[in-house]
Length: 182
Image 1 (cartoon, rainbow, N blue to C red):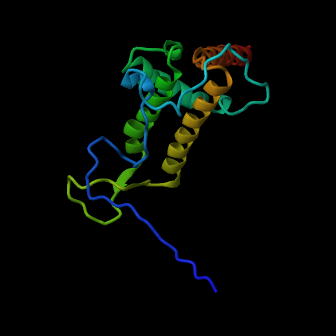
Image 2 (spheres, helix red, strand yellow; image 1 turned 90 degrees about the horizontal axis):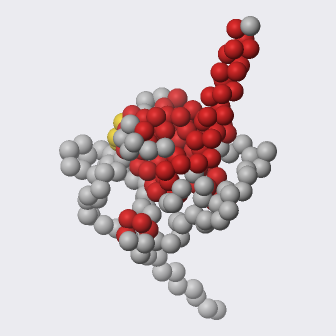
Image 3 (cartoon, rainbow, N blue to C red; image 1 turned 180 degrees about the vertical axis):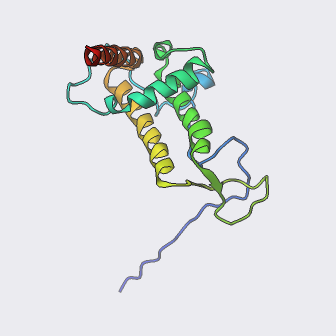
């Protein structure tokens, strides 16, 4: 009989991460941060605009998140709109992931070290939410990020569609308010 030998490998490090991280998620910057010499696997294909299918509900269900990200981060901190990312939709996804990691997750959670060590310089390993509502908000923003990337991949990398969606939603809401007043 032949015996099989199983070799297990593990990787461990004691190095403390130097970047600002809350949840331990890895956020890869777009190639433009590296003079277009960076990672190519996270590139969003560019081609002519394609309208999203009528039954696609993967971005329309995130109007609130689109609005919050636009007002609280893009406009206030970057002085930009979604359309300003037409040339580099990966940058929009990167900025959204940073917004989630550095603003949403800390706002709706508290850090929890797996080891129980609470020293100030000790790296954060995971997060804990105060209640299920906070966890749902964080998960919703993570789903929103995935949906933004999917939308950009399907429509040829055209980010202006998010501004159009917000404008259409605002016009529809105003029409509904006026209709209900009469």
